[in-house]
Length: 74
Image 1 (cartoon, rainbow, N blue to C red):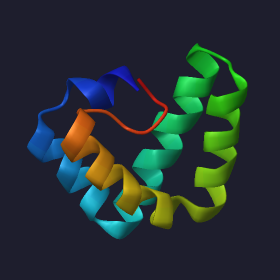
Image 2: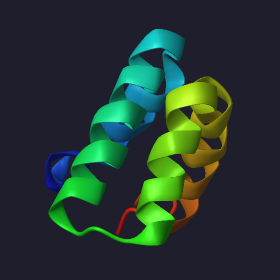
Image 3: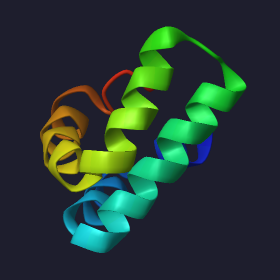
């Protein structure tokens, strides 16, 4: 999670724009966020991203452009 947030905005968007890379990035960021700071919202997000990560990734592209971080992963 910290690694992703430290990247430039262009790198973040590129990681979320490429479909398979998007899903892998989402998995890594969500599960490490949950492991670092356990919480019910982070757990639910990690489980959702595991199954529909490609769809969630498109939402995260817009969220990242607007708020400079992924949804529920600040």
